[in-house]
Length: 471
Image (cartoon, rainbow, N blue to C red; front, side):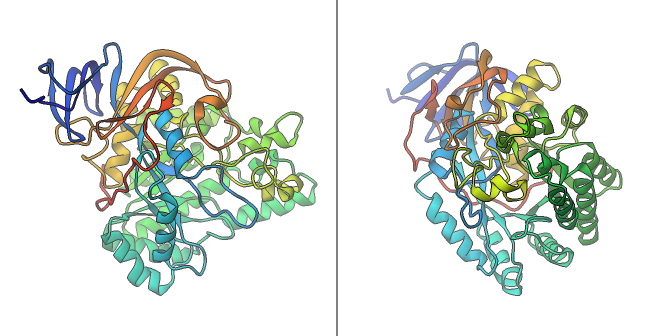
């Protein structure tokens, strides 16, 4: 008799964004084809998931890999090491950014990024598009064509010399997104305010990594968030405010929703477990550079505000904003110019493997959120908002068999060796978590198991996506 299934996952507790139930899962050709309390014996392979949670594979929709950072700065992760780290943390899908440089065709930026990605990822992946130069050709031809080709999300920046868009340019991008159904992600920090504060701090001799946080107070995030929302209201298009760090930006988002404006929001693990004090390092030494990211971690009151937003629904997604650099590297956090002032430090920290364990431990184990909310924030809502649902982001008949087997009782101390990334440190070193991914399964194939990768680079496939979903 022919085996009915390629793989059966038996005896686990299945968790989706809507429900929790005991079930076996039958998988054929990389798809879930059966869910039942007891599937018949005789599959080609079986996994005993007794005592484990069976979760949809994590989706991290905010990831920076092998991205141009300017002369003399190099990211620590390409697609092989970045996807390996993601798999170690229970993820089966990532969506990094194809960055358009000033003067570059958007289509060429995508082609160049495929050359870096294709054949190198362990996970399935899509691309967001970063638009830094919204020329008439980009807006009138390239962007509509790329959206039609399945690149259905765009990111724009309100700060950084090489990326910042003027208000009129933001409005033009939003208008095209509305016309063609793309989701727009916005990095909301005020460019001129940051430049003004940075100049003042440097003139006062305040150049250590800690003063990066002083140059980007909540006010600059609040003002830019309000301005981004006003632009979205004017154009009548939904937007997502990414990496929200504290209460002031949250208040703008909640105010907008009270007026019926469609604004989505994302936050990240650094705003739950780090504070600006981490940027001080030891006696204001350079080691604080390990924690430099934008917006910066803030204070304990901001952490509590972020938790309120996670609990009450202000946030739809929880992403890593993985943006890795090496510390002991002249092309990373210890570059010569960065040693002279925080102004020149590359912004970003690694976090792919730590994302889900931190939220599970601090959220589910400590009773702040339910298992269903955890799945929403780490998988399902990412799939819905970025055009991958129900192929990705859930455990259902017909969906890809992307599954993470999760031990809810395993206690782990986060260390660099567990991250499997290309950076030489983790900002979450020493944090104790309860709950850990045991096995990561992509399209019915084990890709990470017992702390080690189980497939080689290239197993991951590029995904074209549908136009932006809605929640």
